[in-house]
Length: 161
Figure 1 (cartoon, rainbow, N blue to C red):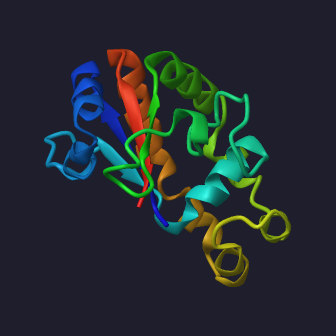
Figure 2 (cartoon, rainbow, N blue to C red; figure 1 turned 60 degrees about the horizontal axis):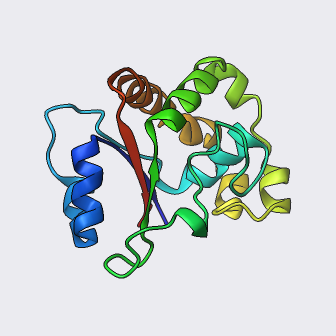
Figure 3 (cartoon, rainbow, N blue to C red; figure 1 turned 90 degrees about the vertical axis):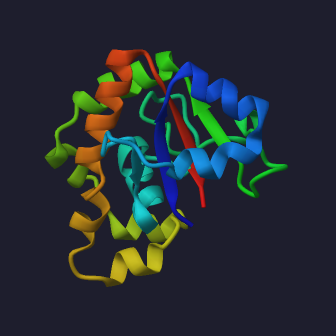
């Protein structure tokens, strides 16, 4: 399971609401902007845990990487569906993420907690050398994407594939 986040305009969100089968083409269509899509490979759940201290959706503005069933859309067209992160949520996430340095986030790396909380890929995350950089690899792109989306009053679409 890989988490993908993609910046989206209000027109993009309306397009997906009108035709959920457009999710996959939308998520992976070519963009001039290289930061339009961020994927975290297998590290997404560990990074979410490092940001929020929890495995699921929380009230923290940093909790955008894990959705809940309430906001899940498009499951008829795409098995996992997608979540829409609103411009207000994007700005709150960007502000909270900006308040943390990469070192702050990396210091929250705890493979024992990953195993205890059954984080996706916990076995791999505990056994591999160099896992902390692997988890952190998407953070610079995440910062750039969320900053640009916040400044443009855009949405972010989240899906797991």
